[in-house]
Length: 222
Image 1 (tube, helix red, strand yellow):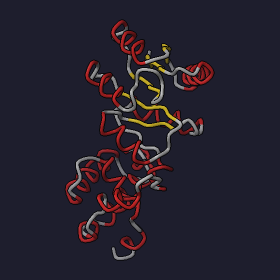
Image 2 (cartoon, rainbow, N blue to C red):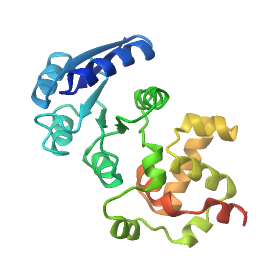
Image 3 (cartoon, rainbow, N blue to C red):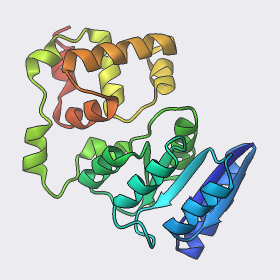
Image 4 (cartoon, rainbow, N blue to C red):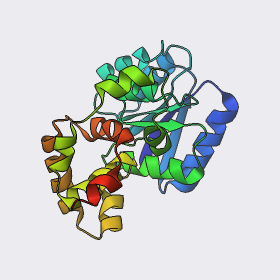
């Protein structure tokens, strides 16, 4: 039985998400609360919680600082942010503060199910539309910081470029393996090689850096 803590102060959305999760994720039990303090207390009282969904704007969150508080107290519980916010800067900062997933409240049912399954399987979930579109309140500054030297991209093999393109779209290792018809262990090896060659620390950084890359340009050379 998978136990998911749903923390949201909006009664209608809280009911909707708990009902949706229990109907669409097999063998799942949800526990609800309305603010960060109650979320912390509930996690303390329920040591078997597998995942927490935190509303970014509920009482006690203090912006992204609530992620740090929860993460510091319960480092073993994966945190997924649920928010109406779609600014790429906020998404990136949420991961920096310790979240492993970010679901926008405008996400489709299929996207929500996929995101939760991805996180429960031990992976991170990036909202692909936001990462791909690169929506940001400070586009010029951020894009300059996230540029990758074209020579580093050119050093990737054709297969690594295809894997990198899938990462940029927010796809999981399992989805990449299926799409490219290769083993998931092979995908993991390619991801590791990509991160090393591009000199980035994780796939989140890689995906954010990929927003402005024309993959067709590089694939035509290989």
